[in-house]
Amino acid sequence: MKKRKHKKYKIHISLMELLTFGIFLLALLTFVFTFCKQPYIAKATLVL
Image (cartoon, rainbow, N blue to C red; front, side, top):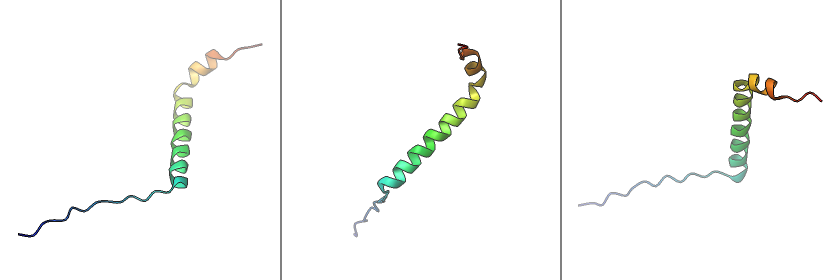
């Protein structure tokens, strides 16, 4: 009886790709939250 070799998936992600993806997610979330909470931001602005 032959033993099956399990395939191990090796994911090679460079640090630059990881940082780029993180910055993209941060920008996307910032964009989404800015437009979701826009009325609240307008009320919270201080007039000096």
